[in-house]
Image (cartoon, rainbow, N blue to C red; front, top):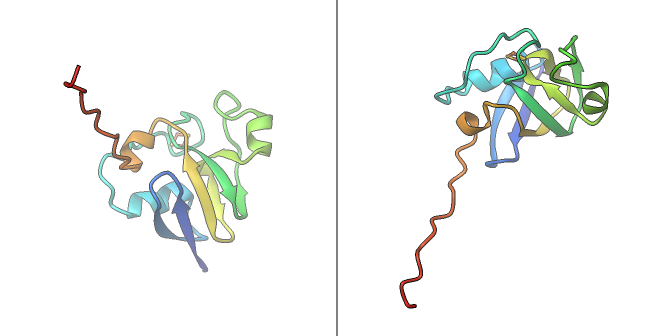
Length: 113
Ligand code: FES
């Protein structure tokens, strides 16, 4: 078993993920609240991520959520992918709002006019 570091580029956080776990299982072990538990079987598309760098093994994914072109570009379902090196990724599926604590800039109204 080898442990790899997975970096979530959206918010700069990272977690360690064993090569025996999927990226989604590793993310869940982070304990971040609100990660939706989807099908975990490559069918619902909730866990879609874009792998920017690193290598991984993958299992069959629903073509409804990941086209062959997506897959070739590294857009994959985290529940179907296990890391074989350090990984850098962006979250693009529905779980993004739960995984990434990106603080929206506060808009201060201009009262001078
Ligand atoms: S949890 Fe459903 S596709 Fe990953």
